[in-house]
Amino acid sequence: MGAMSELDGGLPGGGLGGFGGDADLSLKKKSLPWPVYLAVAIAIIAALAFLGFRSYQNRQKLKKHVAFMENFQEFEKNQVGAFWKCLFGKEGDGRRFNSPEQLNMQIEGALYADPKTFPEKVNNECAPKALKAAKGVNDIEPLPEYSSAVDTYAKTLAALANTIQVWAEGAPKRVETKLREQKITTAGSTWSTTANPNKAEPLAWQYDKFLHCAVPDVDKLKDGQALLEFLASKCVQRKGQDIDQAFLAKLRDTCIPEAQEAPAKQPPTFKATFNKYGAEYERIDPAFASCFRKMNKESKKDDLVQFDQAWVDWINGSSGVRSVGLRAMCDAGDEKACEGLERQEEHKKGGTKPAAAPAKKH
Image (cartoon, rainbow, N blue to C red; front, side, top):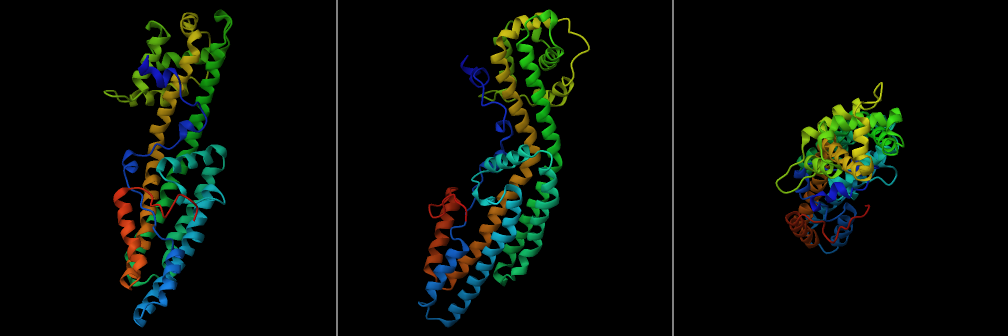
C-alpha cells in the first residue's frame, strides 16, 4: 500500500497543476547566473568613483561604460520588458522566475485563463516585440568591448520569439486535450453515481468505454486495489520503475479521444464492471488524474523545452553584457566593480542567487 501513495491518495486535482512546468532535467541542473549589479547600481558606484580617480583617461573610459550600461538598462526595461509584459501583464518580468517550472506555470496559467485568444496574442503581438528588441539592441551603439556579448544577447531575444511562437502553434491542441479530459471526468462522475446498472445513462457508458480502452483486462483484475496497482505500475516513477510512456501516449491519443462519444448501446460487460469497481471510484479517479498529469507533463516538454532553454540563454546573455561592463570598470580602477566580478564568479560556481540580488522585480 505504501507504494500506492501517489495514486491511492491522489494529488491536487485538475486545475493548472497538471499543466505546470516540468522542464527538461538538464535545465534544472543549470546554474542561472543573475546580474550582481543592475546597471543603475553600477552607474552610482562609477559616479562616486569619478572624484577619486586621478587618471583623466580612466575617468573618460568609465563615463563611456556608465553611459552604455545606463542605455542597456533602459533598453531591457522598455524594449525587452514590453515582451514580458505582453505575455504576463503589466507586472510581467522574465527575471522573476527562479526556474523553468515557474516560467512554464505562468505561461500555462495565461493560456487556460484565455485559451481562445492568448495563443493568437502571443503570435501576433508578443513574439514580434521580442524580434523587434533583437533587431534594436545594436541601436544603443555598443562599445567595441561589448560587440560579442551584445550579438549573443540579440540572438537570445530572437530565440525567445521563435520558441514561444512554436509553443503558441501547439497551444490550441493542448487546450482541446484538457477539455477532453474534463469530459472523461464528468462521465466518470456519472458512472460512479449510477443507481441502476441495468438502466445507466449513456454518459456512464462513455466512462466504461474509456476504462476498457485504458485497461483492456480490467474485468480480469481481482478488485479495485489490483486496478490501482496496475495504474501505479504505469504512471508512478520509483526506484527500478520508469513511467510507461507508451501507456500515457495511449491515453492521450486513443482512449481519451475515443471516449468522447458514448457507445450506441450499453456495453454487455457494463454491469459486472460497475459492480466490481463502482464503489472504488473515489480511489480510481485520483489515480487516473495522476496519470493525466504525467501525460500532460510529457507532452508539454515538446512544447516548452525549447522556450525554457531560450529563457536560460537570455538570462545568461543579459548577465554576459553586464559582466563586460563590470570588467571594464574594474580595469578602469573601480575596486567595487572588481569585487562584483568576484561575487559573480562565486555565484556561477554555487548556482544560487547572490544575497545582493534577491528575487524581486527590478
